[in-house]
Image (cartoon, rainbow, N blue to C red; front, side, top):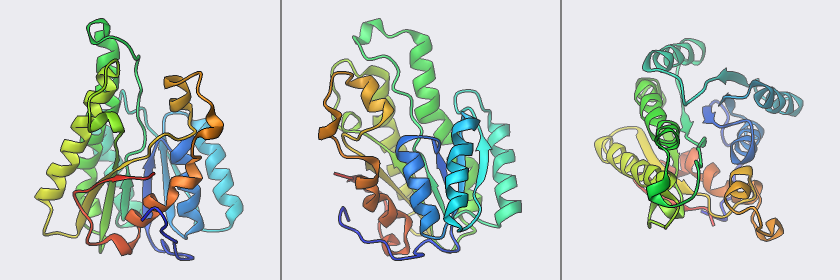
Length: 245
């Protein structure tokens, strides 16, 4: 699927919600989905970034996108319930949910992790995803086939020193994905996780400030795996942890 060739307008008539859509992988995926004919819901914290992506989608002359400003570190279950009601009312269904947004936190010895850092990382990377997924499952169930994609990491499959809260959050993310996939095995809902690998993003730069970024894949180069899992070609795929590289 790393070599997957998306069909022209392969996501037409599909509504796709992407978190962290204002930058990096989320921004690139939003533009790719729009080019494939999807109606894209851009969710993120920084409105200015979301507006810039919205403007780029407008220039494509495809389906009009929409913006949902949400701070994943502060939103409550009520916020997510209202969000789900809005999507159901405006679009009638949701075909795909992509959990792209993540917080890196502070890398360092486990014994030196500040509780505030731990709380922020776990809230954004895990608890918010739990609340958002829970709220949207009934709306996803209204689609003929619905795909939910979580974002994992190499440190979410094998623990690594100094990656602390981020590593723990990604282990838990994979567990949540597997639990959902098993629970909804005989349904129209599928759940998978993608490990993007070393990609040229702002988060990667924060984790490895001295790295030669020219050696890294760009977000556009890892899009085939995402587009495959969003397409109807992956209807039978669920409960999988997939490396994009």
